[in-house]
Image (cartoon, rainbow, N blue to C red; front, side, top):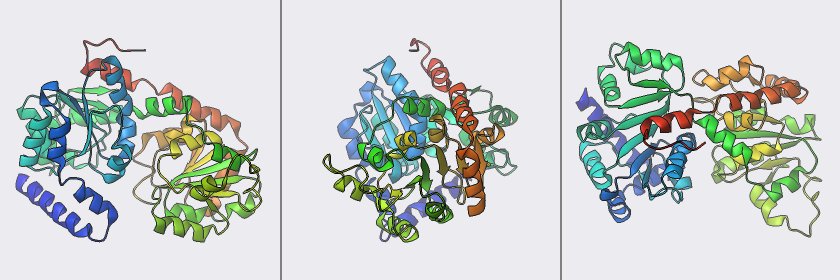
Length: 418
């Protein structure tokens, strides 16, 4: 099986290089890895034995961030190396101040894994949720470097638990300890002979709780909203945005903020075509000044398009109800950021991989929809239901604590800060 894996990695590299001719994200993926070993050598001293955190993308970074920052708070001298697989994570967090180096993860080949791990010489490696790379895992094991998976979650239909999944199971055996989100994941791992497992919960709860406690303020957003109630649509795709087209006519006294998952010019133009009276944040920010009245845009539009990345996690503070995108694609995006602010959430039908979505639906703080009419009826329900708001916030508060559990396990000699 290893030869099939190796060929698959090689084919992926070739296809991505070809795609880079036409696709900006693929180009960043390739260009960002060209000099990665030189960059690592320049920034990292292997004698320091840094702790290596790897994240697939931006969402996993925010998920694992509480552990990273807790480790750093316990020992400010501890060196930290961060790697990303995806450009959408690296490009946003490449200047992250808590890390001594932020890099693209070189493609998973034996030579790359050996060279990267030799250059970094990590004290331990911490991967968040998923990302299973055979050569990195095996080289870490060979060098007796502990490997931890945090906030991981497993499902019965994954290849690890199928008759044909021997190669995939071998990768899991290289992991020193798993910190999983739920009992089902622990039981699945136990069923294939893995006992180094702790049910710690999800570190995202710690992260979103911290974020909601001290969100960044945006004067331009406050001016746009004024005293009007706000419905926010976060991490949306075109299929999500099409469902929102009737909102302006039906609720003229509400503000609608759309923060799409992709903010390239083409997608923003598609949103503008759906909402001709909407204003982009870049335009709003440029035109709002201290001497202009706060109602200047209220007269022409109650819809705002956020055409940048990085604001969404704090924008929820201005809203009363949230719609989260992705549910008409591969799966919903982060609903916990909204719930932490006490927002009931609405999302599309593909949420079965997300335990928090099931939990919030069960307590009446979330609804899954499949059509515009269902979206509007769900909005009507939550608009008048203050208990749903309180239930969403309480749910997040009660699920905190995974970070301390993980840090106490991986750094047992350190007193955990409370």
